[in-house]
Every structure is written in C-alpha cells, then in structure tokens.
Length: 119
Image 1 (tube, helix red, strand yellow):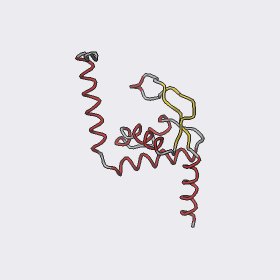
Image 2 (cartoon, rainbow, N blue to C red):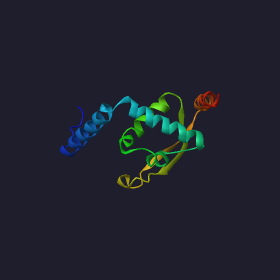
Image 3 (tube, rainbow, N blue to C red):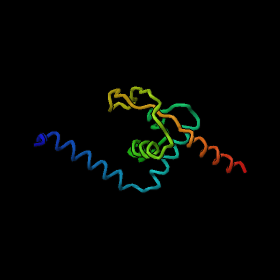
Image 4 (cartoon, rainbow, N blue to C red):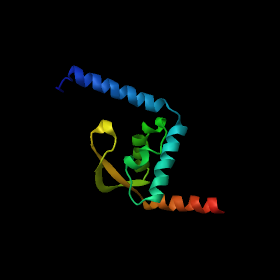
C-alpha cells in the first residue's frame, strides 16, 4: 500500500500542479522564444546553464526555461555536459543545476540558419 501524503506534501503538490498549469496556459510563441534564447546562447558558449539565460529572458520566460531545456534535450539539440554549478537564483539557495552543451545536430542546424541569413 502506498504511503499517504502529509498535508504539507499535498499542498506542495497542488501548488506545483497549479504552476505547471499556468506555464502550459502560456502561448507556444513564448516557449518558442525561450527555446531560441537557449539555442542562441548555446552557439555563443561551449557550455551554459540556466544562470546564463535567466537575465536574458523577460519575466514570462522564466517559467518556460526548464520546459524549454527539457524539450531541447529530448529533441537531441542539447546534452548534459557532465557538470553542475550552483544556481544564482536566490530562491534556490544555491541548489545545483545542470550545465548543458549543444549537440552536433544543433550545431549543424545553427550553421544552416546562419548561412541562410547571410545569403
């Protein structure tokens, strides 16, 4: 029989679900913008983390950052570098976050886009 959740655990789960619903209710254009920012930073730096992206995004983009990173990872465009760094977000109290890098697939895609813009 599964363990019953405490009141605090139930409230935390409800709050998390509400935040996820709020993020999902945003437009796909907002998520696309955040994904583009991730890819842009990835072409400029060998490795990057959410710390490098947060200041570039408008407030609405902050909630999409984790979802965008996960989407790009699942799509094979970014991969974990094997490193972690402390978060610079005050509310995380220095929690460790992943460091990412573009995959070869993403670098080829970025090169094609750059060539198309130059033409």
